Amino acid sequence: MTDLVYLDNASTTFPKPDCVYDVMASFYRENGVSPGRSGSDLAVAAGMMIDETRRILHKLFNNPDSDHKRLIFTSSATEATNLAIKGIACQGDHFITTEVEHNSILRPLYMLKQEGLIDYDIVPMNPETGMIDPIDIENAIKPETKMILVNHGSNVIGTIQPAEEIGQICKKHNVLYLLDASQTAGVIPVDMQKLNADIVVFAGHKSLFGPCGTGGLAVGPDVPIRSTKWGGTGIKSALRYHPDDFPQRLETGTPNILGISGLNAGVKWVLEQGIENIHNQEMKLIAQLIDGIENLEGLTLHCPGIGHDHLPVLSIAVENITPQELTTRLDVDYNVTCRSGLQCAPYLHDRIGTSPNGTLRFGVGPFNTSDHIDSAITALTNIIEEAHQRAAGAGSA
Ligand SMILES: Cc1ncc(COP(=O)(O)O)c(C=O)c1O
Image (cartoon, rainbow, N blue to C red; front, side, top):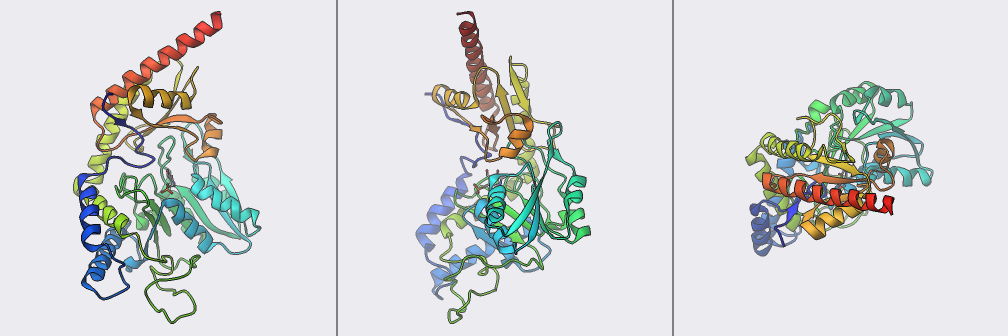
């Protein structure tokens, strides 16, 4: 079997930098205890590691609040959006989101609407540009609008939304602004002050190089967010009620110190390499991939406005073969791993005309090489040629 070519980095990055595996193994072996629950040296060291990770991420997102404890760890970006939406929604609130969104935002909104708590509107995406028009967002604002939720960078077509302009609109209308930076954190700057974002949601296991099971949210000042999970926090144990303090307001139970230690190492690695350097290298590989496949017969590229201001994500669809069959063949016959389907973004696929099968998505990461891309191009070329021959044979039979 040929060497693995992993091109599913938009789902989760793999491999992680060596330091992530090393730190996780040694930290958990030497300090794997519950932080904040005792004054032992081990518990203090575990608590300090978590605190340091909060500080690094708080700074990375340039949160205008001086309190780094408003950086909250969760098990995923999905858990973070759930905390934010359920912690903010009140009876009769209106939310605005977009067709670019992932189900991690769409489903909580849908479920709360089903329960009769809130209402929401979904702003269309222009299929030619892959962009949301901020004017459409502004036009959707009502007196009851509480929050606008936007996917910063598309996990399907890689476009980056005009997050700063949308932030200005939120500020003008005094509406909360949640940015889903699951795909952008660690790839391009995500600056809460510049973008005027009140909440940034991130996936620790993607381009911040933490392990699976890590994510979180950065909560800006004056965000009226309630706790939605209650229980042990290690502080104020005599209180009947769950404490209001950050981070305990939104974090309950013994934290994932193994995962957070890996995330700590991953984010430090990203900062050492430089976000811009990683992104440039990945975009070169995306350009190489496009070059190698764009003229294949029956292949449609879904990468509107591809250029530097784009994520290292590329979707394609091919005549005579489903994305599902393509990924299976790539995996089984060529050891090339990528992702097919709707990628949890059903409205976007409806808009670009790729429902119900979706697309085949490539997600490039920093450990991919030019040889990986060449292997993927060769594999794809062979599979597509065979699919066309098969279709021609079936047609003439
Ligand atoms: C844009 C976007 N939002 C949210 C998520 C959900 O991330 P997680 O799997 O960490 O919940 C993803 C994951 O693919 C994503 O791409």
